[in-house]
Length: 299
Image (tube, rainbow, N blue to C red; front, side, top):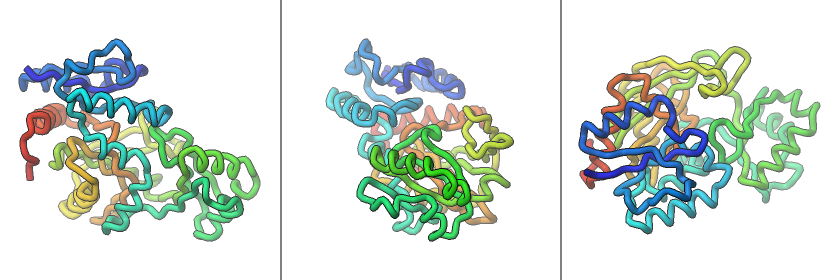
């Protein structure tokens, strides 16, 4: 019986709540799976045939340590999904530049790093030059809205601490500034879930009153939605830009009519909303069985 580690963090040693049914779904397919905290020194990783990266929601705080650890586990002969080179590519949000170059419609972004001149590393300057009334600022390496905030042009001009925080983040990992997408506030942000390249289900996420972050930990809610064929094609085009096969992928974005604007392509540790569809855990288990057994991707 194959043995698979479902990788998580110390804060969630038994995985996120919506992933608990996955253990039974894998067992029915003859796969022995168990949660494993990635930095637990007691774990003998060599006893696993494969590892699936799931709720490692602290990796961004220990970036180099996490990717060094992945390298050591892979050298033990344990296959890792998504593959480490895909995870590393996706771990820096600069991948959005590649999506845009490949023809995917993405949210406009201004990038700031340690080489950016100080007079240009200014939120007031950026918002004025881009004509944005407000913006969201994020680290290039981040998860769960860590170090993410929203501000108006007036707030940026009035409070110099915003620029100080921007420059700090720029030196640590790089920063990104994006306009607030009004449709996220008014209509919500979509998440389209794919397992081994095949569409599974989709949800629209909405922020709580007074919030701009749609994650559950900030009070966000979600509901099932059905994407059009055109939106699915656009989401699949974003996944196709990734540098390798993906066991799981979540495409986040704003849908207006049949047009998708991608805000994120999540290939590292996204919530998969397995509680949004009773059949989703089994579909994910089937995909895990395929990729870990070496079967070719489904079309």
